[in-house]
Length: 586
Ligand SMILES: [Zn+2]
Image 1: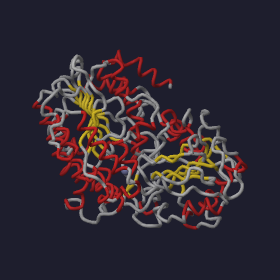
Image 2: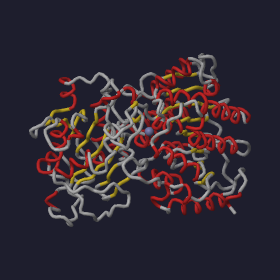
Image 3: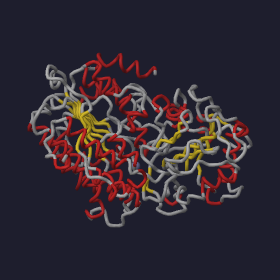
Image 4: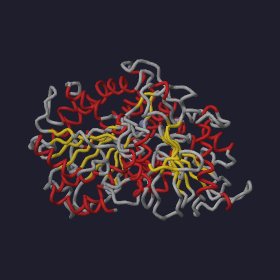
């Protein structure tokens, strides 16, 4: 019966019913990729019950609308807004025709490393970097639990974690740190928070999401990896459009009556998914999608909020997780295309037993190495092979790998293959850097990476970059430390591979760890890492907003400071300071 529920929902029971149906879909496992096996459901889940004697919301402070757009870099979004190409979004920001008297466009903030979806959003919404929250990428291995996590699968062929993110808190459960929503609620218990489609939402009152079939169709289309039609041909993006449209429609429908959320996060993914698969390349794909699909939807969101007077005292924050870099869609440039070649062959030829690319791989398997892919970067995890020398032996992953016998043995194999001196020619000349570090036991503070330079020698990253300038990379050393050197830094592997990608101007010389696509991201390059951050408020001037945002971002404006910005907007700069300090010390 819950499937026939009309769009106006207020009952927690309905949400639970939908959840049960959705879980059936998620339990279909790998076959969840195929829409036919998924049960039609969707809508929202009520995450907290509010008793009748508690205020329905907390409008005494400025509201927040957080518009999270996947895969749009700063240059692209700002250029389009200032050229007047996005009137819907401009309206939400109180501007028109490229004039924004009540908005501040930050020019400094950088994405986390890797510049990829899940690590980036978790960082933005917890206020701490990956070495602290432990969500190191779209895929990573947790050696303490001997478990492979794939909140946005790259090497594994399964949409299950994507579905479970909305039905079963898949990403929330990976994150031990408090979310920005929990931190807001700590100081403002009555705050009403809705989150639409974002992967991390713990602490919110409600998560709004698209129907399972719509979500599965979009990811199936993404997994097909290619769409040839010109971007302007709506057929080629219709599944992604359907997804974003449904999310905005759910939100605008729910805004029609009842208490207005004080904090509303709306996350849209079509820009990123379409950029990956569009044969015309990411810039044309995103421009067309932003202009023709997303912008009209944002105009609808604007109308729905304005009709409730919900923009009068609300900050509108627009940000993204990463940019996009065009790559060649073929088996040569896609290093993950051949399940038995490329990095897999290097690991195998070096004499390591590799964990299969599967979410369901037997956790008691006898593997000695694990690969996790993420576009421009890949993580390699190595066991202390003295604990499991023979096939069938289960390695003790609680123990750190030995530096010479395990870590450097495999790093050297990648290094030599990359230089064309070993047996896997497909890897030759594809890697920009092979990074290594001395492993610590699970749970101990992990060390920063260093660059492997052959013959079992390493060099510090900053030192290496002085001798080997990478003009397109931005703050590689600092962001690598934030990824790797910390209490959960071991999640970024014992060996980190950076493919030639963001360092190359010529598309034909770029490589990536994934199946063939037309565009990827994840690199330390400016193109992948310079993200937008726009803050607007109808009663504030650009200068006033700039002061507020700059002070919350601090001298090192990395993505985790978005949490500090949100707290400063809600509670005022002075009130946000203690929380910002606390986050920085973690
Ligand atoms: Zn992406």
